[in-house]
Structures are given as C-alpha cells and as structure tokens.
Length: 239
Image 1 (tube, rainbow, N blue to C red):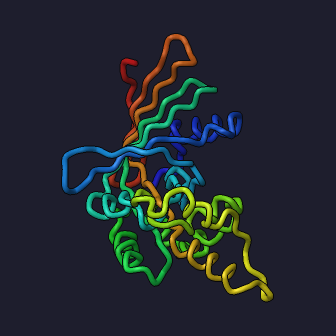
Image 2: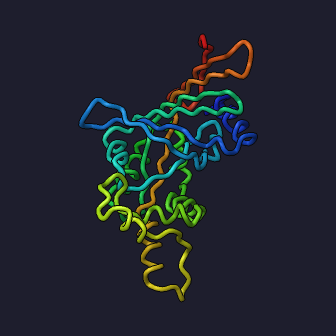
Image 3: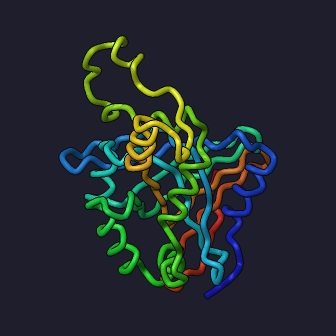
C-alpha cells in the first residue's frame, strides 16, 4: 500500500497549523424517510491514521448519541462534508463513509464493530481495526478533553426535542462538569455518567476529495479518490 500522503491531507494539516480556529465544517447526511439532505456544522476534533498507512486518515468529530443524525448515518453511511478555510482560501468537499461510536454497552456499538470488521481493506478504518485501535479509550480521551461547559451539554434532554418547561427548566440544567472525585456528591457522579454515556464519536473515512485553491493565481482545483488498495489518485479540474 502506498505511503505517500495525499496533497489534500497535507493541505488541511498545514492550514490548521497556521489557522487553528478554522475547525468548523458542514456535514450532510440523508434522512432515510425522505430524499432531503440534512446539514449541520461540526467541529473537527482529530485525524486518525493507521501507523502502517499514513496516507489514510479518519476525520473525527463528536455528537450526542440521541441526535437524528445518528439514525441517518446508521441507515446510510454515505456522507459529504464541506470545509472552507478562509485563511488559506481553500475549500474541501470530502465524500466518505461515516460511523458512530457510542459507549461499548450501547446497542449501536455492535453495529460499529461490525462495520469496522467489514470495512474495505484499503480504508483507514480497516487499517486501524487491524492494529487493534482502542476506540473506547479514544472516546473517553476526547470527552475528558472537552471544556467543562461542553461536557455539561451532554446532560441536557434530547437535542432538538420540545423545550418542556421553557427557559426556567433550562436554567436547571448543569452548566459545567468536571470529572468526579471519590468524595464528589452523587448528583455530580450521575451527571458525569449521563454526559459520558450520551457522548459519541463520529468518524468519516474519506473516499473522494474535491479541493479548490483560491489563494493562488491561477486558481486550482483537484480531485482525489481512494483506490481499492488504499492508494490515492488525482486529476486536475477546472476551478
């Protein structure tokens, strides 16, 4: 398998090194009950690559396991994300297969494990699975790395559900969470477990990337696609 890292990946890495706040992208999924695409903003959290195949990588973001996008991804894992990095005037449209990783005893965890086992051999997911990657350790690491205010957001009622009780009810939600100590009260421990239980990773395994570079003259546009063997091929396009 080729070890050459594709230019789209090095471009994102370089752009984020220089513009570390440009981590917001838009992720589109398909509702299985309609032909309508649904899009929302996500935060780029990490990139994961098999040690044996640095040319392959997963894009990692996070979600609440109770959100509608979870069932959408489970029903149809084909997704696309659009990422505009203003500082470098670059746009990336990344098509790929998404998976949701909840806590290990959640009903959907088995679905993820089956996906990982059946992933195409030339994919980043298959490579990490072969190396015995610890997904639960990664999930917990990312949760603990969130701010206390972000952690508390996973304690709220189901996102997108009616706000029963109005703003007065919302004022009673936890505002900030920190990892409990042995002497922490039961409510603190319960809130931590609730938030950690609702916290899930979303990974996107890229298969096709459309990259537009508007910061150079003449402008450039390139398409990259992953072959069955895990190599990346490319061609120049008209911007």
